[in-house]
View 1 (cartoon, rainbow, N blue to C red):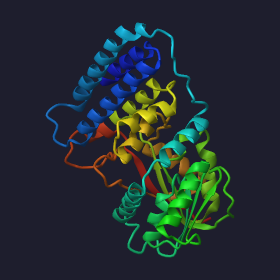
View 2: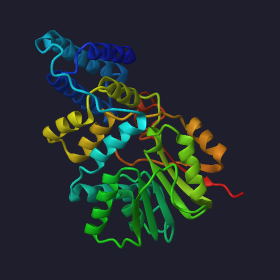
View 3: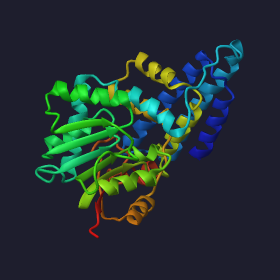
Length: 347
């Protein structure tokens, strides 16, 4: 039901030119739709099926855009925005440098606490990481590195191909007062890291590889630098849930509207930093979705095994098993956010 409505929403949106005014309304309509849908996702006691409820919200958005189309002739084709979006990785290279560098010092510390908590609830705190040498593939602004050190790791190395991200990460590390010998950041590709074979005890790719053109090449690089017996934290996008389909449709509708325009609109609305990052991501980024079987098969072929499913730990995480009390968890989250721990098997 709601999938048909999403297709109709995409058609009506495509019929409206991306002038400055029309783009403003399109972005606003999708912000409203996604935030309203989030209320349905986190409600464990729905009176109606989520497909019906979400369908109603999408119909509201269709009505809003239909009204918008009626007045689009006023501007006609003048003042069209010019897209700044290129290839998949060029797109994400620009986007995430804008998003990751937009955190205040207090927001950054909150992110560190968030990942420290995630490590703990998954049994990776309280000594599990003690003395381990860690590497983060696609570290963004580097908050996960601090969580690792606070959880007992001896060294954390973060790599990212965004120069602005690395500059931010280094500045944040220095302001917090962490020794560079404990946390090191470097601008480089996840496809080719300047570290030796079998060098790290623990590796991370936290929501990065699903944005890549060649995921297998990146996973092979993780395998190369991990020691035999080393562990790998993986977070990648799931599939088949309301949240995944809505994200995909939102990014499609706004695909020709520049990143800067969307992000500046979110800034103008003064949305909280974490929510602004989340919306800036889902309204712009392209995700390659997986299933549990597809991601574990991908990793098994490279030599990983002993898979264990992890949890996000927060109400807004798109988890398939976020609660046993929610009768509609599968409809909402499908495969769910795929968080797992994998081990590099001994040869």
